[in-house]
Image (cartoon, rainbow, N blue to C red):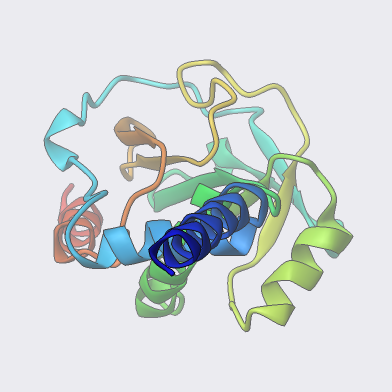
Length: 190
């Protein structure tokens, strides 16, 4: 009898392990749970305020409207690179959506959620199915490696002068008060 219970426990463990590995939403659920207990807090003190020429870095939304980062000078820019198939991206989406809803009506803060795959139909459907309000874009120009090296998810924040003020590769909890305070500081600085 002990042998059977041991085998059942082992089989259940293997099944759960395989589900976490192969089902993106299951892995995202696990990562989100770790975020909620304090893991994956973004480190803001790593901001380097490097000068960046944002002119010509363009994104296109689902309606075909082009946005050039160079035209957004005077605004804080929150730029997130993600993909629908990426479990860490899926895990941080609820926290980013919460941050976005806090600032969406603020004319001094702009959010760009760049689908790394460039499939706006798929990414828009993903947002609607999960009831996220964030607008999606696809990359329409070259992105300097200083901003995006291909790691997903990657989040960068530019200050009102267009300087790179924050960069984080990997999952993070963007609903954290430190990020909200950081964006407010950037927004209220000269």
